[in-house]
Image 1 (cartoon, helix red, strand yellow):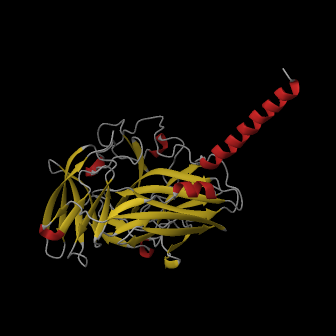
Image 2: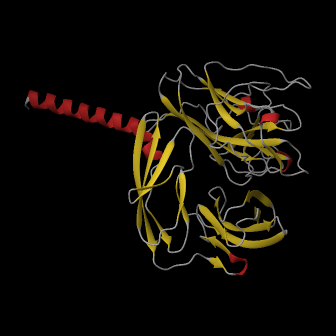
Image 3: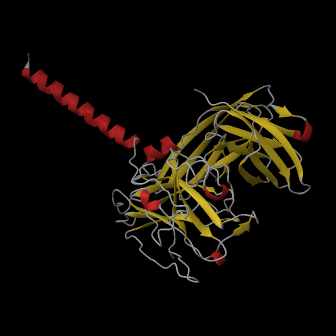
Length: 411
């Protein structure tokens, strides 16, 4: 065998392997958050008083370790989906999540903290994300829940009567427009992009404002806690253009003529958006509402940290076809059966506030949310296959409308 040929072949194999490694690394970002969905634990939570987040190693509650930990390994109060004091929620991922109290009659607040697997690099941009869900029996819903990246941990032990446990920092990550989050049914994403100053190695999640600087809405006067939120799926990843292109990519889709749909992704702090159609600028938000009558191509740009990513989406319009409409009450619920998302659309209620409640077939309340928009999307990925009831209540006249939905996940 020719030795030169053999050497060149080996060099080629090594080169291909290196190129594959670079390509793979570009697309497979490393989450710097250890145990991001709290699945790993050294002890199953057991105390009805909660406060055992440190069982989900290496997480901690930095102020007084009162942050709670739920895991399906516990079959009673601290289990999933049925949790303490009437809570009911499946994990966003796996079989566990954490929970913190962020507002109530006092300025007592709880936090969730962990050390990253590596320090952040000065000047690099990072994508930070986590999901929250409001406890069913919370008295209040609030805003200002965010994430703070820091060089040092916190070990404040200041839970004395009349003294707040506030960590007085400015979080780098908040939800765009900082809305009040009152959804007890869906997991709500809070995410953003920021540029590291260098050396950050801890992430802390919670509310970094006094109650007087927050929006706190009374939603359940007979509840048994303040504003109490579940937390799951925490991530800190380097925000490379290739990664964000993959995560936020637009996909062509179909729609019925006469319908209105949303395209794009929910706005993320730290990103600037621009939408175009036929070379005409449309809007500068993450998601836009469209109602084309013919097949149309839309262009979106996202700009962050000096990078600009271009993407296109083609909306193919069916000439005929009507959603699964319920003529009485002018309500449409579609698709039904559904696999991932159920849309509720009504005419005549645009200016009213509607309560949407999801019930099991035997009448157990699984979650609720408020809306005053014509079309509302409900994520049903965490529901088991079966029949459920939607109860829609018009808060102006207390009119209640019941509709069945069928959850049918693909195998």
